[in-house]
Image (cartoon, rainbow, N blue to C red; front, top):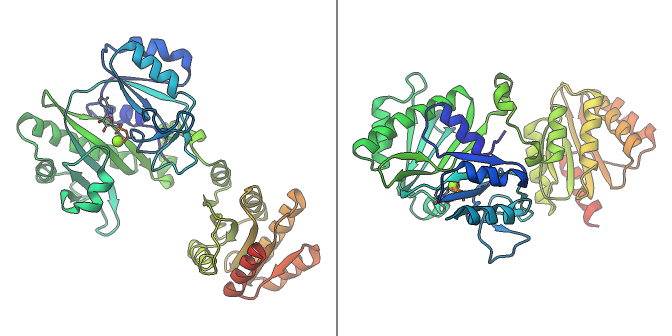
Length: 397
Ligand code: ADP
Ligand code: MG
């Protein structure tokens, strides 16, 4: 689960991280008082969407010549004008995809006097099995280019779980940032606080780009992107309250209510599969035969008919889906349960696209019988290869 920048900053502030003063607004009525609440003269108006690259983004409605989604404003009037221009518009950034995201919240923040922009993130490093700090002196809006062109400017410092951030770790991170004097001491304190927040709140990513050094030599968190481990959210009701469902895919929200592992993709073949590995293989083989999956969906091991019905409905409700492939290898999951779920869903919502079903394993004969007796117009397949070829052919003609 992701949260907005202003929420992330509030959270990090509770751990002692230095952040600028700011006010979030969710409607234009709040604009004037938000601007008046900050001393100025420099305020920064920042679009709050669950995607980075806002500063370099463009608004669909405003065209390519308008300013981006993060606007430094030098007077109250300019801040207000920027708020009015951005609010409700669709911001397209490198991370939103071409459809962009509607800006329903803005954050108005004190302008900072920036001397240096650094890059810091904390993440779970799967290769070393550690929580690691990633640090670079080249922070700001071009970190992707730094990673691609000068990867030696990016330093990774792994943290041992049993000790947390030691003084030696903090020194290494401070070295990576080339910090000195009091700035360095502030940095070392900050690294420990950020690590504590990361672990206590079960984050999967904490990215601060930029972490700045001000002209006065203070460190400050100027941008913050936080993702939480969805499997740990039950331990954090306070974090769950920060969820902004308008930022999430409606089909993914529905899937999460049924505890389905579902991820929307941009192809045209809807997939219903059991097991993450088989789902990946199914997506691969669809690609191999020249089409693209519309989703990743793992109905899991012990799914009920109700859950399968919900899953099938989520797939059919996607207007991009031009055909559906059900690929089930029954182990714990029984083929008859899948078949009943599919038949029930089609009864409820109909079926307007070709459907290929490949069933194998536990209760496969019962499953096939349910499908055959239902009168559904199903294309049966013998194995994964056959199934993939049949659905691609049915969709592409
Ligand atoms: P994004 O990464 O989505 O583009 P950022 O929050 O990093 O958004 O803002 C982009 C740039 O805008 C920063 O790199 C920084 O140069 C500038 N900026 C952001 N917030 C402030 C602020 N409070 N004061 C001054 N400059 C800011
Ligand atoms: Mg940023």
